Length: 173
Image 1: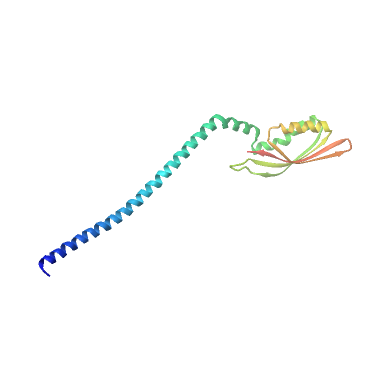
Image 2 (image 1 turned 120 degrees about the horizontal axis):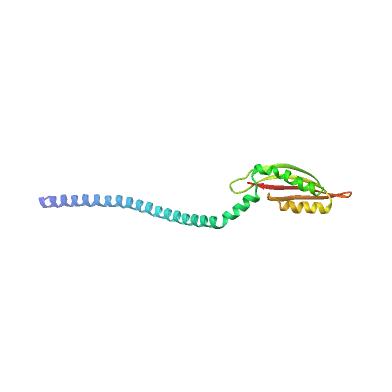
């Protein structure tokens, strides 16, 4: 090989080595840049999502302040605490006495409140008396402070008197 060919081969080798290193560097930095671009894209999406969540939260807060607060106060008046639930039979007794009714009240179980629902106490109520008095009693009972749901009503006639056996739930917070 002549001196010219040796120099040409040497210079081409150096060029290929530099070009190869450049291409490898571009591929490495290109994939690294691509990873960073993906991270930036995902971060932007998360920021946009959180921004929309914050906007929704602000709307909910304004609705709470303008509307829900009033309803919450009504619910708090209508739905007693668990400790106040004990007063339910004591509150019904004067009404039954006033209407000349015989009444027995028993709590039969309880379900604790959760973050998404009220708790309730199961009860059994047995009332004896005349039809008009029983009607008045149950009208007042449905207007009473705790929210009450009747699950089962049994009407019986005993001689001159009528008897109503109620199984229901009284809600508490």
